[in-house]
Structure formats: C-alpha cells, structure tokens
Length: 469
Image 1 (cartoon, helix red, strand yellow):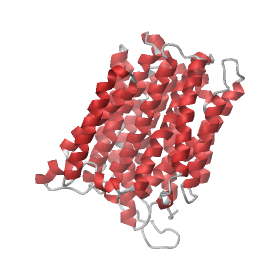
Image 2: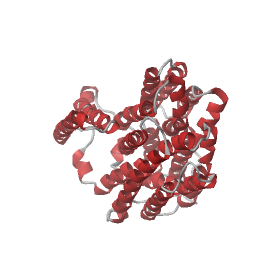
Image 3: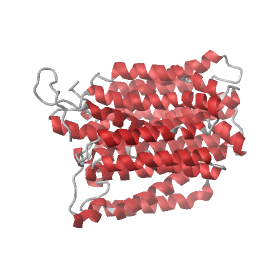
C-alpha cells in the first residue's frame, strides 16, 4: 500500500488517508448506480423501438439486479481474501464489453444479456472502495475520515439521482443506445485509474496458502447461495401461484446453505458471526425495504411521467433535478454529524410523505406537484444511503468488510426486485395513473415498515460513526 507522505492530520504525526485512492474508488462505485437509474427513462423508448410492453422491458431492470445481487457478496469475499486491484480491473473491463454489446443489440434478448454483463461488471467497485477504506484505517491507525465516507455516499446517490436526467440528455442526443455506449468511456477511465492508483499488493486481502484456496473460497457455499438467490429473485420478479416451485427451491437451497455455512471452517458468509450481529442484520433488513421505495419511485414514477403525464424522456429527467439537488444538500449537511438513528427516522418520514403526495397526482396535475414529489424524495435519498453505508462500515467484522458491503447491496437489490415486480404488476401493458397510485400504496406500506424497523430497533446506538474528520 502506498503511504501518504504528507499525512499529518490536525497536529498528529500519524499518516493520513491516501487521497489518491479516491478517484478509482468513486468511479468504480458509481458504475452500478448509474446503470441502475439511467435505464429508468430509457425503458419507454426501448419498448417502442423493439415492440416490447412494460412487463417485458422490466427485465432490463431485473437482469442487472439479479446478476449484481449474486455477484456483489461473491466478489466482495474475493476482495477480502485477495485485495481489490485485479478484481476491480477485470470487472470494470467487463463493463466496457457490456456497453459495446448493449449499443449494438438487435433485440430485447441481447439487450438483457448486456444488462447481465453490466451487473457482473459493476460488482467490484463498491466492495473494493469499502475494503480500501478499511485497509487505510488499519494503515493509519485511525478511522477513515468522515468526509471520505460521506463523499462515497454522496457520489453514489448523486449519480443514482442524476441518472434519469443524464439518460434523458443522452436519449435526446443519440437515442436510447447512447445510454449503453456511455459505459465504454467510463470503463476505460476506471481501468486506467485502477492501473495507476490502486495498490499492487493485496493490501486488503488475507492471502491463503495455495493448498487451502478452495477451502478459503467455500465454492459449495457460493453455489448454494447462488441457487437460493436466483430462485428467490425469479419468484419475486413474477409473483404468481404457478411459480410456487421457485419458492420451494429457494427454501431448500436456503436450508442447505445454512447447514453448509454452519459447518464450514471458512464459510462464504459466516452465519454464526452474522447471526450474533443484530445491528448488522437490522441494517440489512432496513436496506431491503428502503430500496423497495427508492427504486419503485425511480422506475415507476419515471415511466408514469412519460406515458401517464406525457413528458419526453429528457423532461422526465429534468423533473427529478429537485431530488438530485436536495439529496446532495442533505448528504453534505448531515454527513459529518454523529449518529445514524436521526438520519434513518427523518428518511423514513420523508418516504412516507412523498408517497402520500404521489397518491394525489393525476394526468392533469400541475407540473409543480411532480417537482414537489421529487423534492421530498430527495430527503430520504440523501439520508438513507449514507446512514446504511456508515452502519455497515462500523458494524461489520473488519476481516469481512468488502463482503459485508456487498451483502448490503444484495439486500438493496432484493428490494429493487420487489420494486420491479410491483412496478410490472401495477402497470402491466399500460402505464397509467391508476397503476401509479397502486404502486404508491405498495411504496407507502414499505415506507411504514421501514419506519417501524427503525423506531423499534434498540441496537442503533451500537452503529458507530466516524470520529476522524
């Protein structure tokens, strides 16, 4: 690990955080959220161009999250063991390949393949960033600066919120294929930054002897986890009684996975440690329901503003600017403040208020009411992601920081799958105001559950916050 030679912080002679790591950390971690949200305003143009209804284009959302939900904790575990450099470079290169495939895709099927590749390609960025934060804390002997954690959270949520606006601009200039082509220069920049800035040694990993490589990876545990997750997410993508067998497979795979992990010497996910870490489990549960609301808004509300309200993709992106500005302001102001409970409570209330306002909208509502909804949603967008990220950083086992961060994203993506399924079920073949209201009721229920999980969680006092600013 390259040490920062100018590292005196506030009068101490201890080395400071190596800020040369920030550019690759930031860019790598935002590749997933930008691809998660930029598609939201492209779904309608893609459906028109390829003759696919909303129920089919929803797979463009689900495919990325299915791949990423599986890949994040797996890649995170590999980063914990071997360090971030090689995995970061391989994954970001795959993002560039996915961009080429998506740009040239002749039909919806190939486009879905491109989104799967994007899902796997964006797996390393966020776990690598969290692992680097942890390794820098160990190197310097102090917690990573609160400003770094805040910057990472702000970068992720900024890109997530600005994604629809950027997508609208790209579609206006070069059509929906431009939203896939964007990944090529982003991937090139990420690979170059990784080559020149990331440490060559596996600084965050704990390398295993050659003979114990398979045991360290816990390949059977990974396979059972994959079976559990894929069957569960496929069931959530298309909730129907005829798909009961997928739920049975998920339960069976889950039981086998638990039995395996409880016996394994070096488990993929240490259920014994995780089961005793109530604060971390509670954080994962909150992440799931929080992202049901967040992604239902990003996808469902964006589609409704185009088809139900009559805006162009570009103007649909502009409507979300208030959310972008509010989220940035809230994150910057609250990022250095101690505690997470207050952030979570205000974020929960913000979600509920925004959902209630959504229920008042119709195709004849004045434009300012759409802007009001976006503005209110900016409050939880700015608070929830920051609070959840900081909670995991301080609640997780330091030896498993990357995999714990990846698992946070997995729970978030399960929430996005629920949101995607709810969006498809609410709209069907036609995106109208009635469907949007139905979706808003689902979001409201998730928002209330999020509030209850926060109010009655007595472990939040154990979710520390950074003290080294």
